[in-house]
Length: 102
Image (cartoon, rainbow, N blue to C red; front, side, top):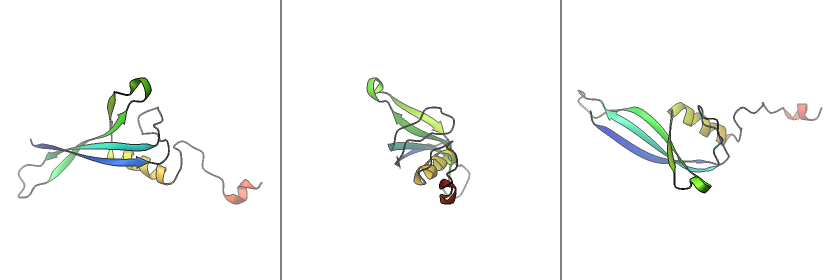
C-alpha cells in the first residue's frame, strides 16, 4: 500500500500539555508529521490518515534528541484551542468578574 508523509508546523504561545503525556511542553514551534495511506480501488486518489506525531526536541543535555510523540488529530486540535484561549489544561474554571470581587 502506498504511503505518504506530510509535515507542517504549529505554534503554541503558552506552555501546554498533550493528552496522554504528563510533562508540560514549553511554548514554541513544533513540527507535526502526518502519515497517510492511499486508498486503493477508487477512481480518484484518496488518502486515510494512519498516524499523527508531534516532534519534540530535547533541551539542555538532551539537545540532540528528537522525539516523535504519537497523538491524535483531535488531541492536537484540543491543545491548540486551549492555547488560543490561554487556558491551561486541568486549571479550575475562572470566576466571573462579580465572583472575583467577593
